[in-house]
Structures are given as C-alpha cells and as structure tokens.
Image (tube, rainbow, N blue to C red):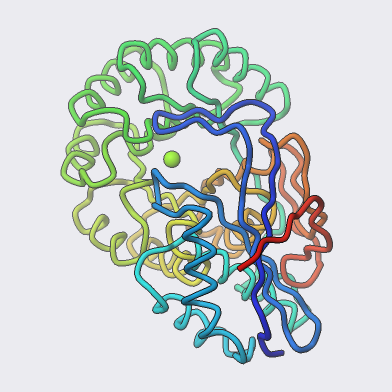
Length: 365
Ligand code: MG
C-alpha cells in the first residue's frame, strides 16, 4: 500500500452553543480534512482545525505546510513503514503541529487498515469504551449553572468548567456550579491562561477553604510562564494540569523535571499527531504522571484518532476530554467510533473506520 496523493476538504459544522473560553469564542467547526490516497484504493482521513491563538496554525498554513512540505516527501512511501513516514512528517518543517497531526492521523488510519484491525488494537489494545467530560463555556453565572445541570441530566459525570475572565466572578461561578451539581459530577477547572500565578493561588485557596472540591485546575497562567505554573502547583492542593504550556515530548520532560504541573493534557494538534502523543504518554507513565487527552474544536475524524490513543494508553491517560463531536449540531462523519454523549465506543472497523463524510467541500491545493 503506497501513498499516491494527498488532497484537502473543508468541513463546516455549526455548534449547538458558542464555545467560549478566556482566549476565544467559536460558533462553527471549520476544519481542514486531509485525505491520503493509496495505490490499493484505500483512503486515510485526517483533520485539523485552525487554532491561531494556541498552535499558530491557520487553514491556509495547514494546507500550505502539507501541500508544499509534507506531501512531496510522502508520495510513493509504503504505509507499512510507519515509523519512517512519521519521521518524514515530523522533520518536514518546524512547528505546524496541526498540519502534521492531520497527516499522521490519516497515515495511522491507513496503517491499521493495512492490517485489517481497528487502530487501538494496533497501538496495543485496550477497552473499546471510554467516558468523556463536557465543556461548560464561560458565561453569566446563571447560564453556566443551567448548562452544568443540563449536562449532568444528559449523563455527564465530569464537567470541564471554563473560567479565567475575572477572578472574583470566576470564584463565584465555580461556587455556584459546585453547589448545583455537588455529588453528581466532578469539576475540572480550565482557566485557559486567564489568571496570574498569584491570582490562581488566591482563587484556589479561597475555593479549597470554602470546601469546593475540584478534580484539577488546568492551565491557570500564560503558556510560556512555566515558573508561574510551578508557583501555583507548589501552593495549592488541587492537582494542576498543563495544557497550552506543553506541546511535544521534550517539553513534557522539562515540565516533569521542573515539577511545574501534576498532570499533562495531550492533544494531537499540539503534539503533531499520534507518534508524539504516544511518546508523551510513555514518558509520563515512566514518571508516574497522569495524562488527560483533549481536543480542539474538532469533529469525529481527528477526535476518533484521539479516542483510539486513549483506549490503547488507558494506563496513563486516565482523563478524557473529547467532547468536540458532541458540541456540533450534527455528526458529519459515519465512522468506526460512536459518540453518544459521555460514552464513546470504538467498533471493530479497520483503521478509524470512516465510511463517509457528509458536506465535505473539496479544496484546491
Ligand atoms: Mg485547556
């Protein structure tokens, strides 16, 4: 099975409610779909969103990075030589992690199809059913409480609460949600870089003293402020998770050695795909550090890939934040991973099992 071409499409799915964090507001999924073609007629699918404020990737940069730098290296490559292909992808150009991720996802899809097995089995196997949390966007307190109650009623047992806008209001938001769902759902707090280190310590100590139990605090400070992240980690009881502060495996090693955070949030769009996500999981596992697996605003193509990684690395990926597909007004993908609210199930279909992508507009490039 040899790669013959890589083509692109645009996939648009309106969200049920706008996704609001301290960094941005998004109301529609608009993702580049990457299609890797082979001489056997097998097709692999990958996907990447534009997240300019996090990875720096835009739709234009994703298509250009793949079309001009990655595709020329991959044409003619044998899918069976997976490690060689992932090296070619990772060394094609600096950064551009979302572009690399989209290509790797499609290549891993084909690699598992080559051996007629679902991807998670090729990655070592595991339980094909995992449970995700859901994001509660930052908003007025009453709206956040109502969204939280509604999520619990839909069966979600973990809520990812977005904060990081205004420290005083954030504390009130968390207290109100906690008292509304106490005992029915675990709360994960994501400040998306919105606080200073001192504000984060103040907020967490206030919440801890008030008896609010949180499962974790995610990325309280600016991405580059590792000293600030460590300052918070050293001073609060609640486990602190790094998200925007760590992209690849070497950054994870530095972060763990600094003891700057307790948990690592792995996202394929930050790692540059599956090969480095696996490396990070294995590094964290060696150090006894737990991981979450998360996603950007993505549909069930790239999120399916994350699900396969989560199932295969469940020993260390103990927390799942893969609610991308459930945020959309409809699921455009007919495929091998079934997203049913909090429960995600992998079928026995080979690869990622994607049979059809509805509404895909093909792009030049
Ligand atoms: Mg986050």
